Image (cartoon, rainbow, N blue to C red; front, side, top):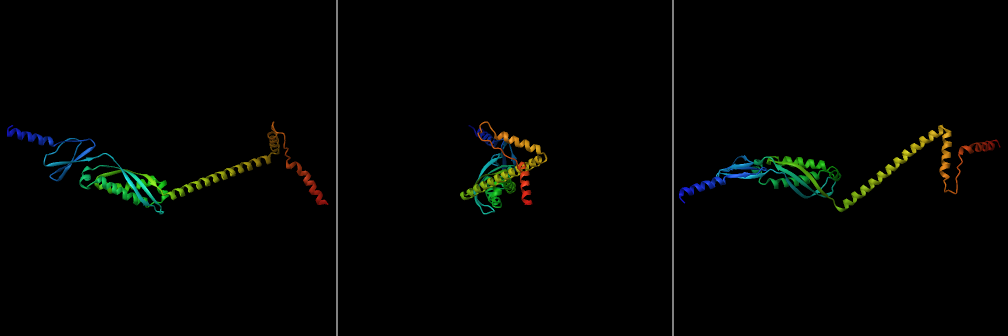
Length: 253
């Protein structure tokens, strides 16, 4: 092989080594003699051998578990809170030159923010208004990671681990709340029933014949086919003339 052919082979190999394929979900940050000259991709790109270098950045959304953090809430309750962080790179150049490791840094920011936000709310708010706490954490972490070209889309609290005594206290509180609601509902039922009875009594008082019909209906219900004893209630109104006569005789004597 002649020197010319060797030279041609070397040139071809150098040209081929400069051909790079960047995937659809990637971008290539190009450095030329140590300087950033732009972002290329996706598809086939040409990198000048020995002069330019490429660093690939993944643009897909990253799902990251935030380890359980020891948190003391505003009402002095110690809990362990874990969460899930969703983020992606929107500016590949900043993700390469503004931060050494944006994945690790995002994780650290998320952990500290989780402890800070959860420590500013009470336990009831942390349990009942989880969406509000998620939004606060997402906003703070997104502001911190924006200079790195990282966009935090969602932060979700995954688990809240309560101490055993606190779980028992919450269970007793929930049971007491259910008993209170049951008593209130029963009292409201009694009140409504008393109102209906008062309305019925007012109607019967205006129509004496209706009271007699109700009396006869009661007798029919009591005198069932299998009853050996029949109760015969006597209305007080029937005895009132005798009582009045007796009272009048006693007053005359």
